[in-house]
Each structure stands twice: as C-alpha cells, then as structure tokens.
Amino acid sequence: MLWDALALQLGYNATLVAIGSTLLGVAAGITGTFLFLRKRALVSDAVSHATLPGVCLAFLALVVLGGDGRNLIGLLAGSAVSAWLGLLCMNWLTHNTRLAEDAAIGAVLSVFFGFGIVLLTIIQSLGVGRQAGLEGFLLGTTAGMLRLDALIIAIGGAATLILVTIIRRPMMMVAFDPEYAAARGVAVNRTDLAMMGLVMAVTVIGLKIVGLILIVALLIIPPVTARFWSERSDLVVLLAGMAGGLAGYLGAAISASTPDLPTGPIIVLVSFGFFALSLLLAPARGVLAAVLRHVQFQRRIHIRQGLLALAQGQMIYEPLTLRLLHRAGLARADGVATDAGRARAAKALRDEKRWEIVRADLTHEATAALYDGLRDIETVLTKDQIEEIDLRIGGPHGIQP
Image 1 (cartoon, rainbow, N blue to C red):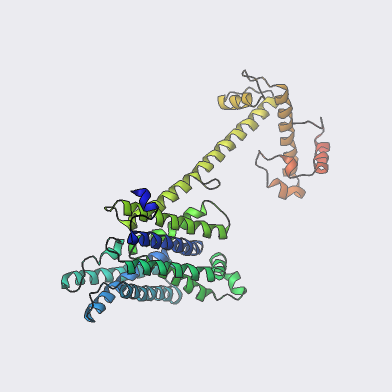
Image 2: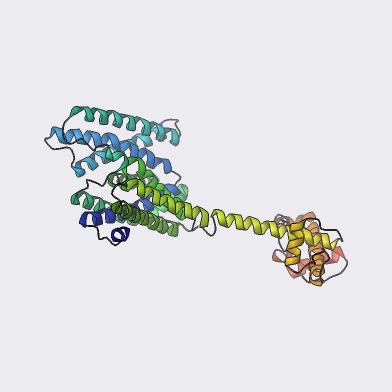
C-alpha cells in the first residue's frame, strides 16, 4: 500500500494532499534557509504561535456571519492577520525598547499563544458552528481535508515559492551581511519584513497539514540538514528545498498508506530522519567524517613521533605507534627502522630543526604561525629559503623522504 501511495494511486484527495505537502515542504525549506542564515530561527516559532488567535477570531467571525466556521480561506486569512500583528509587535519591541530579539520573540510567542488557547477554550464551550476539530490547527490534520482545502494549500505553496525565487538575491545579501546590503542600496528593514512575510505565508498555508506547532520544524530542519552538505549558499537553498519537499512527499505517502498515522508529525519525523542521516554521513561536516579525520590526525601524530624517536635512537614503547610504523614499512616488528624508515626519520628530524629556525626568525613570523608539527615545510617555504636555513643548521643536506 505504501508503494501505491508513493505512486499517487490512493485517490484524488490523497494525491492532492501529497502534492500540497511536497510544495509546502519545498517552500518551507527554501524560505527557512534565509531565516536560518539570518540567525533568526526562533522568529518562525513566534510567527507560528501568533496564528492561533487569528484562527479562533476568524472562526467566531464566520459563525456570527452565519457560516459554519470551518471555511479554510477565512481561517487562513485570520491566521495571516494575527501572525502579521505578531511580527509587527516583535519588530516594534526589538527596535523601540531595550529588549533583545530573543526576549521579544518569547514575549510575543507566549502572549499570542496564551490568548489563542483562551479563545479556543471559549469556542469549545459555546456549542456553535462546527468547532469540533478546530484544535487540529495545533498539530495539523488532513483526515477531513476537502479537495478545495488541498488545492488552496498547493496553490499557496507554489505562490510562496515563486515569491521566494523573485526576491532571493536581496534576502541572501541581507542574511549574510546587512551592512554590505545596505551599502549596495538594499532596504534591509523592508527585506527583513519581506522575509518574515514569506515565513508567515508558509506558516499559514502549513497550518492544515502540520499545524502551528510543528511548522517550525519544517522551516528549520531542512535548512540545517542542507547545511551539512555544502558551503555554498545557493546550493544550501536548493538542497533545503529538496529535503523539505521529499519529507513532505514521503510523510504524506506514509500517512496515506496508514490512516491511523497523522500526516504532520510523520512529515516532521521524516524530515528529522534526513537530518539524522546528514548529521552522521555528510562527507565534510558529518559526525562520521569528523571521527575519521580525528583518527587520521592521531595516526599522523603517532607516525611523526615514531619517526623522531627512530631518528634519535630512542625505543618506541607505544604499541599503536610501532604498529603504524610497521604497517607503513618504516620499521620492523621489533622497532628497528628499515632503510625507508631511516630516511624518513632523518627527514623528520631535520624538518624539526628547520622549523626551530623559522620560529626563531621574526622575518618568518607568518610562516611560523602555520607550524603544527605535521605540516611539510616544503609547502610553506621555497627551495631557496630551505637551502638558506640548511646552511645555518649545517650538517648533511639533500636528505630525501
């Protein structure tokens, strides 16, 4: 059944939910990247929690106007207004008071969410409209999603993605260096507001699928996942969109194939799965790569120290050092140096003396800062400079590794 869901063969509504979730994931991943690079990840939390009062007030307004209170466009419009007010409050507190941004975010988040919970409790006690299930906006729900709801989410996700594509350049400049962006004529405050507005748009259209609490994860986890794989900003944006879209698609498919599983939490868990794999397996920044680099660094140190010991006629007592030298063909099992080992040991000892001269000479101050005990001196000095140092050292010349 999972294969049917992945192949979009479980019905029209399930297909729309999958497409909508995919577009939402792509939009959230790409939009969240700018927020992540701007170091404002918590803003998404404030925006998402600020939507709850708007949902509740829109529900009450729809009931007063004679509706059933479950019109998705009306509820999303209310959440958008509420989220925008939350953003304005947060910006005002940040720029016009002594509160730091994190404190302003905490204040807006707690007050708006608390007010929303109070309104939600009142609605549940009124017995009007079709309020049952309104709390689904907290964690998301697609069980009762209509075709129109899915279309609204899909169209909203696509529109947000198009807007991000149009203004990506100024947002990227502001995210990396606001001062440079201002010098280039970019309106930093307006760009920040536009960025927050896109975050708000993603949050609003994602309420039905993942809910206002979990939408934060969809905005932040894909960019963090992508950051493990690349140092280039444009590639990070692309990878974040792919990670978010794939998480939305797989999460919707898994939920559709197992009706008892909620869509929003499954999407977030799939996204976390991508993050965990990236954390472990990313080639440059992953945990496994870091462990391998550390092991290689230790081996280089052991071999270097072992060569210096051989050059000075000292015994090697460390089993790992002896084993590494023997494996490299530099020493026998009993610790006696081979011909290649003696040449390498003589070279290592002479390099140490060369580095001592370099570090004592103020004219080589910049070069001396590169010394770490492992770097080949030929990579930082020219052949003529090395010959000049050898003349000061005296003794044999031209020792080959």
